Length: 488
Image (cartoon, rainbow, N blue to C red; front, side, top):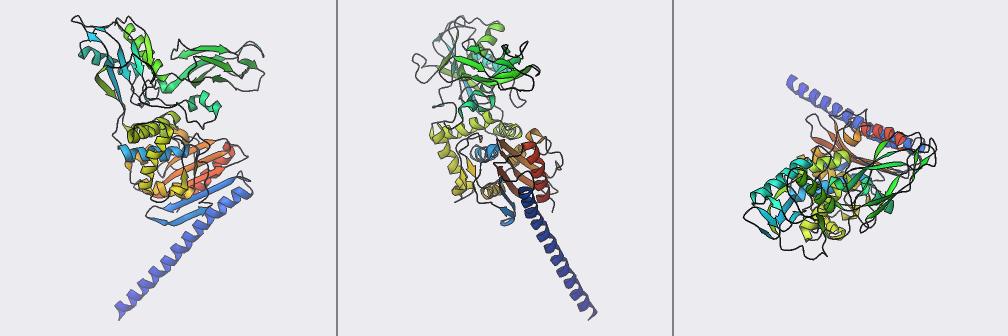
């Protein structure tokens, strides 16, 4: 009898504890919604469009918060989550891009190649890149020279040809804003690239307002490109509005805009439309600098060129793994890497790397990840630079929940304090994996709340648009929201 009373008492205690936990859970969820509304009514998000969705990964039907969650919004660089996740799903984390080395003509008994050497692009975005993910250019060139030596080639009586013809179509997405395509963050991807298809310019103010800006091309060299300097020194406090206007098919560029007299000298980066030619030029320079005799020059093969076919491939080199490239893409929000991954998916699935083919490829993968949810996303590019992209917070949170078991994908997302999350100083780095996204008036954060073992427990997406306040004011408000979502 006494034992029966103990069991009844235990059951009652457990029931009371359950009621308490549920009440606390309800209060926590309500506090999240109240916080969002306070930021919209009286905070930096006043007048902005806000969409939030967070869900328990173990029970995706259990929405912790759903605020405008079915409204499609601009994801900015949160689109990179879609691109990198789909690519890891399609290719696998150990996938590597291959760059081929070949030659045309014949090799004499003395090791002289009477013909041309080809660098055959396979979409590797890391060639010559400055980040720690990429192999150093000199090390890569050494491997290419080793392949030539292995084929019996000691000197080259011909040209070095960069072949980027494997990817058809224009470099950039046709819907990108034109001014973006002049910048380092809007440079287009190509089958053979170099230094992420950018050019470094060293700039400084002139002696007085109205004087020409001092400009020197630093790296890489592009002898074929004629840069007209129309930029002028601006009055103190007017900032930096420099652009180097370039266009595919033209070997002329114009540096325009102003650079304030009170600004320090700096490195400015611009778009390079000639990735394959730049790669050929850099390898040609390296060959000559290391004692190789090359009688010809450097060239670029384009799909409509004649006289550049019939070469023999003698080997190739491989990029870092896709997992490493995706990590760099998401940590630093690298648009060039994202677009290269996106176009590689189109090439692999259809044999054509134009953007329409890329969409066919990625939509097929996404349908496998989030079946029947295609109405929750409109994707136009790989990086999120297009203003025509749109995603619902609910779709993004659901997508992340379904990708939570992919270790390479999870580890590609930075923790607070890393990469583009360096400004999030109040979040525990061991509790979150998050991707940021921003462009004029838009700031987004999507990612995971982790459990004590580092496994994703909650997926969330926070999108804001048309905010009048500066990002520096919006960011702390969203950081507070993320803190609340991860509190329970």
